Amino acid sequence: MLLYIIRHGIPDYATDTLTPEGKKQAEAVAKRLCLHGIDEVYTSPLGRARETAEPTCRALGLSASVEPFMSEDTAWRHFCARYPDGGEHWAFCQRDSILGSDDSYRAPDGIGRGLYTDDRKAEEGMRILREGSDAFLEKLGYKKTGVGNAYRILRNNPHRVAAFCHQGFGLHWLAYLLHLPVHIFTATFDISHTGISILRFGEDAPGIAYPQCLCLSDLSHIYGAGLPLRYHDQLDI
Image (cartoon, rainbow, N blue to C red):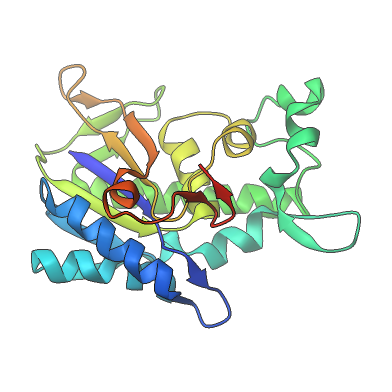
């Protein structure tokens, strides 16, 4: 199985929709995913993710299934941090606090302490994400064994599966799927609008799959469509 994790296009957060540029990005994603075909489409319940998935569903004659655990609203409530000015933002944006401190960098639990508005809520957020991810993968034929990062293959699944979601949720999900320290991964890597990350679930041992990241936040469809290559719609890349 190949799992395509796709961030939504450039949004209008106030209305939870895509901007005109974001809609063009969604059309470009559809062309890219039609190249080899997608068999199943899943999406966050939020409008900007569902709207990004729509051109792909239309092109391939598929319907998107909503997965509540992929919601950015849930991730935001658990993985935010309070900043010195009193405002809140994603905890992983505190890159100096995470990457510039040995104590934080080496946090044994893989989450980090003192980085979140509420560490207990962050732990609860990871529990929700883990349970949602495990149930989702088991539905697709891969059951977490609890040993290393092994998934037992319940049935052969040759499908290409697309999941349209978000930045904050997507980074935390990728960290979990790849069994990497959450605070290090989310502070070190990022995914841009309509960035496509592809994970392979192959039979690496008899009856066992270990998720392998084939690419992270690929934007070749944006280049192919002649759209601006911008990180977060701010920095030309």
